[in-house]
Length: 300
Image (cartoon, rainbow, N blue to C red; front, side, top):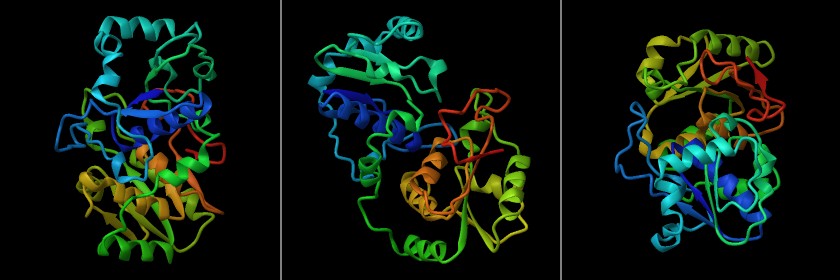
């Protein structure tokens, strides 16, 4: 079987699950999830504390049992082993490995070597695997599984109707933990959003913006639009999957430096859709996003 470590916020959880599905399909085996990283009962996006929310989607993979995870205890808990595994993962293949850990510099980069493993037995995968190239062979399955299990409540249903009836734009601002000095993503400049809005407004008319953020008060104080705008804040972090559903149903997208809004745009693909994305995901760091962003997205 394939066991995929699920960690981070909803966007990362979706990337990891999608990668796991692809690996399980490639090796013709079962997929199971390790969610042992989630100990906090209450999430706090401003501090980077995340909760497991994938179970609110129609995912098919079950959780790995304690007994199934025990085989990988040494690999999971040895800092020194992980350091070596990341280092030797750079020049060498993953041939015969039972613990596949993604080198840190591979974030946003597709590495086809992950499909070169020929060892029998169980495989544990640890990483982010943030490229659609990892899962482009199971797209239909992903779109079928990344659907909310429950129908939306009254307020979200009303908003979905309004979104569907307008030239709606999902605009996402990640502030929260990105504003902490200890983090390295950084907060995108307000200029990025204004430039993306200007470019979109030049080709689309009658725009209505639905603004999503982990820190909506900060956005209200700092991002001022000349267009109709609805600040979406009623779902909160515990129901961020409802925000994702709203984003998916918007016609166009201006994403933040966030895998959450990446998935909102990717799952929301529609004819005529325009997606604007930041050139530098980590503010001040020039890292290629050629494997991270789909080819038809507009980079600002």
